[in-house]
Length: 298
Image (cartoon, rainbow, N blue to C red; front, top):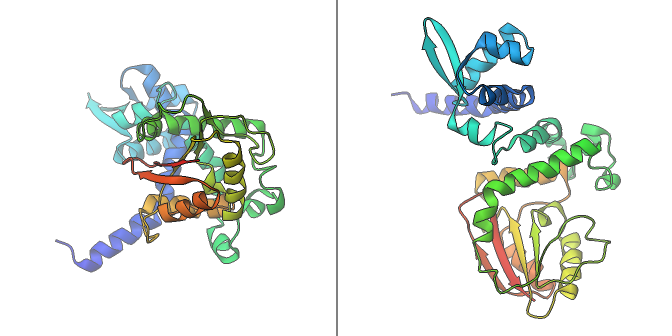
């Protein structure tokens, strides 16, 4: 058995090399590794993958073997040759044709989020997003120019739909919503555009983008428009009340720092925001997935 120092050093290297693992995942998605193997419907050797992708033999071999070590691919040896297939994880979440594919969100993370995270130290030092450093987007123009192209905007929207295909069922089952005849899932320019009248408004992964002040402005607009007795369903990844965990939500909160002007919040912080806007009957449901649900009444 290794010493505590050995374990600590192993953990240090695991954390330090984490970005390399991410890049293996991102590059494999971008190159289409999982798509080629899904479409083949049989195990392929490295040469067959190279032929379909048009990539280098050496680079492809290294990537395939690393994916196998990460349990993104499974390996079979026949006649002295190595053949590769998708694992259940890759078939379910990484192949383009899967109904629960997360490919678009992963590519958005590779091309946008990853670059912003390269400026995390500056974000912590300055307390503001890093689009200026990563992409040359001034902070004051962040939300009018956050997508550098229409293709990027569409990829992000598709990515959100992909996440919802996995997490949405638990969120929508957290409360009985049958009491609300007209439901409006808010998106777009909700700070400026007229809000449609509804019995229930859904804010899914919206409030974490904004400061408390901006959240209050939006919540007050919704409260004034919401029908009497109506409600608001907030879908966010919730921090523990002490703010120290879960680690995934803490990472999401740092992501809000580097990419937006917001943060992830505790249930108590959301309760304060909702109450100050005139909502009451605050209920929280932990879903066991990455997003939780909060229901409040008007």
